[in-house]
Length: 196
Image 1 (cartoon, rainbow, N blue to C red):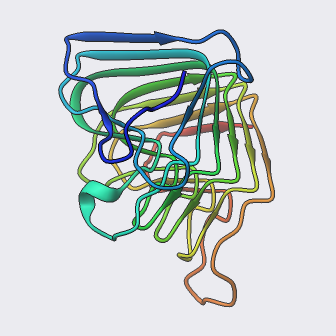
Image 2: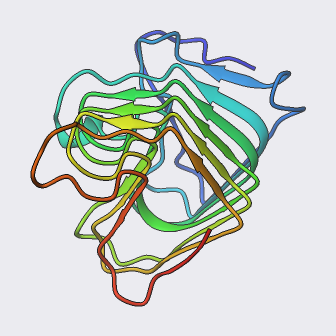
Image 3: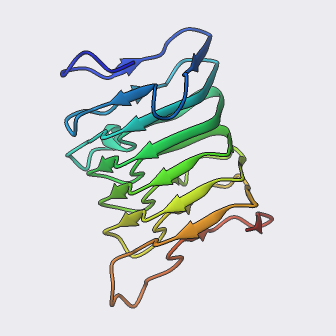
């Protein structure tokens, strides 16, 4: 399974969308370093499992170029990812792999070598968002941002971030900055729970 167009992202506009792969090495959505992979703005719920999203890329710093693998802003639904891998996705804005502005649940996922120009090497939640995010049993490896905070995860929204049984290694932010915060996680929401 591959993205076949070089010019457009995959739009998901049905009420409910489910993508089930055959395994991380068998089912791969590959942007070849030239495109954003999935734009999800009007689907009710999006469920993905047993697949890899890799080599997504956005070049500009525009808001629409946040999230090189998945752009999910104000979708009014829930994103559920189980046993997925997000690898080598690069954003010219924030949110290297995923821009999140919806309720989301990540289980047993791998975020590996994703990068953003701004906050959130793996993913970021913008300040305008109020949805809760749950992360359980996930691995964040070698994610980085050129900004000073949120090498793996940046939560600037008002919703709560729940992280449990998850592994962080090799997260990086811009060095030698006085404002450097949260090399792995920068969470600014009261009541969030980090049970790493």
